[in-house]
Image 1 (tube, rainbow, N blue to C red):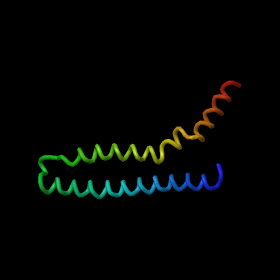
Image 2: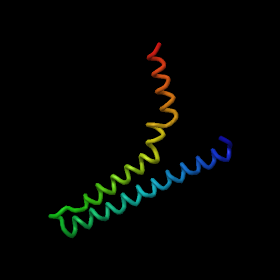
Image 3: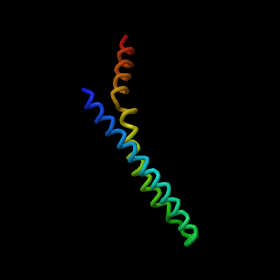
Image 4: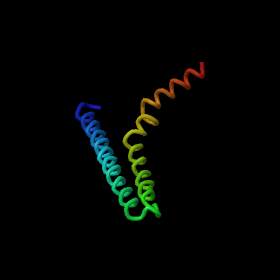
Length: 90
């Protein structure tokens, strides 16, 4: 991989990371507002958690896309597993 490709790959990762943090901030603010509205208008009927749960699942999915694949199934993980299996054969 030449330096230009490395730069574009790093830029892509940083853009994904920035997008995740942006969505996380929006998630926190909007859900705080929804919780406040729910408790002020209809405290006897809790509905805010539906938005929080399903939007949270989408946010977890995005977090896995940004963080998870490198740490869990990335090249570093693959190389570590290869070394582990090679050690077991000895």
